[in-house]
Image (cartoon, rainbow, N blue to C red; front, side, top):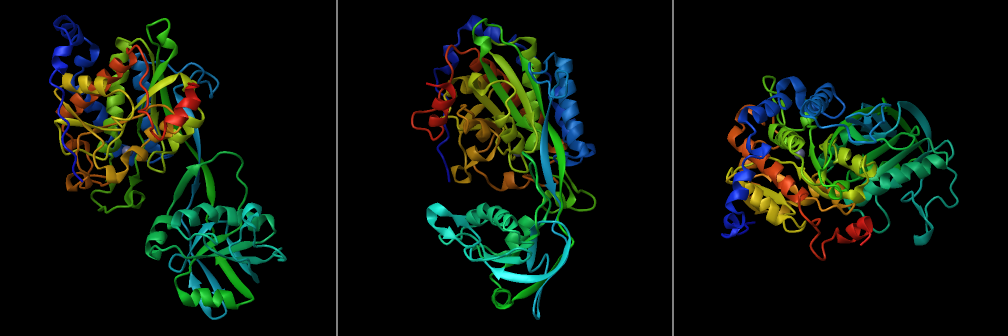
Length: 506
Ligand SMILES: [Zn+2]
């Protein structure tokens, strides 16, 4: 899909008077050196950081680097962030890491089904069971829909066989959404294992590839030990037939154990200069985690190059964040600035989800989120902005980019739904106008895919002149928005506008 290139309004350069222009270029973001931005990206995307995977050593080293940069630059911990007892740059984010689905076997009479190929263990410890099998339809209870699949069944000490999805739908998302609930219900009823016949209209290979590996999720609340839960390939008619026919099965698995891990969001604060406006703040965000090494990356790698460096995704955005930290700390704008380097983006936008649920400063004082994230770029004459025309700050973003010789391109590749695929959405859902400032591209084509989540996303191949300009434009745009008289607003009718009304109470 192509969009017409959005030309800058001609009047824009004339809109800033000459004396203001002179003053403008003395701002700290205009003095940043290329070597500073290059140093940030070379460190963060260096091989030594091993792809910065959430909860692993390289991820911690990146977090430490960002925190110590804040300290050096005069960015202070966010007031009130005392989770570790004293004021701190770190917000600890609790995760649960589920190991890969291990070997195992389910036998229904002569039909032997192997874990990994014929079924996947979704949860549960190691077991070696031989027990009665009870068919419980979809395994759901919902009074409103008069589903009562356990009516008249005694499943205590038995294994439960259920269909995937609901009586109404077999879409993959519905199957996934209801699967955990089925396990919970079975467990409450005293069952010792669940076998689910997985029947989504997607190839079993795809399901298997996606769900067999390590999974990281947010760990909120107390985790209870789970009974073993298998997804059997229900498309294989002989498996479904065998399981439906037998009265007893054997179920052996080496288990899939969830263990608690953690990582950090790194947060800093720059108080604003205006006595009144300083009560409000702009939230700057960029994720610093990436996908890791070797098979963690989910893409091709070689023994010579197995590290997913994530230079473009997203050491690039973190460099912009650190540039903003430096320039805005030296010469603060009217409103305050909260800067958060986020973890856990690659495993499901989890760091930002956690932050949005546990903001260090109240979100209703946050007038704008300027997120930076990117898959890559193929046009160094522009910055691409997801949500540019929805979030009410086009004029400032355009003026800032123009000051560094860059154009602005709004919402490239709408078919990719990029607005809802980065951390900005965690804040947008709460109502905060939240665009994502992205390295330049107009289409999500080969040039982007060449590096996106690939081992080739090295810092050495980054255009450092562009990195500097991008980081400066990000910083200057933030300043212009932070100095505005009024807060930016969602476009009328935007899907996040109701959330904004709720958040800001107007
Ligand atoms: Zn990213």
